[in-house]
Image (tube, rainbow, N blue to C red; front, side, top):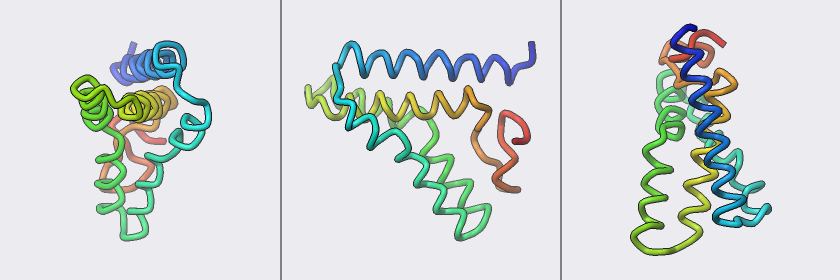
Length: 117
């Protein structure tokens, strides 16, 4: 199996775990899931400034560190919306990875760390 296939399967596993956590463990509201599900893709607006800025803004919004920061914030404060945001954001990234949408290269939107789209 190719290494990018492992990364796609890993993305699927993270997506399933994050969304199950949101729906089952946190009992998160469906309307919040619907509102936040595509929010990280707003980062594609950076492509209006060109492929370098676009890749950077997209990649900043599509790494697992930020959802983990939100989840850590929940663990430290008990503020449940932080957990909702972290779980939905991690789920979004996982679904993207499973679908083959990797982190973008500065050469263009179709070039990713998982191969060409």
